[in-house]
Length: 93
Image 1 (cartoon, rainbow, N blue to C red):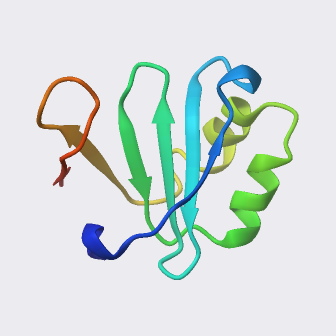
Image 2 (cartoon, rainbow, N blue to C red):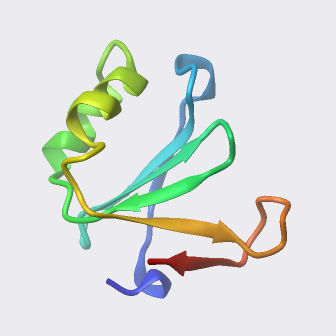
Image 3 (cartoon, rainbow, N blue to C red):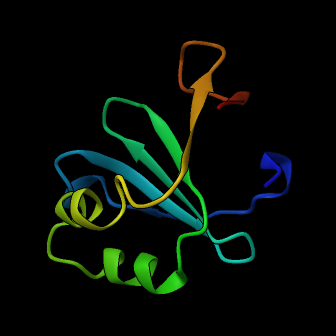
């Protein structure tokens, strides 16, 4: 997976989650982006589109992520190289 080739469909959900700021999904790479309210961003690999869809329609996105994403998919943490949550991000493997 090459970060330069990922195109995320972003969905802002700040008002609907206590722990998640934003989520996104790249359908061609099956990559799920999650930005937590603490500004940490993670890309989870090989996440089925059904998992993303169920997450977006779940009653609690944070609970869904805790039960169905964390610990189930390999992830990469995106590291903010500027310290202000702006690009560029780099892969931290």
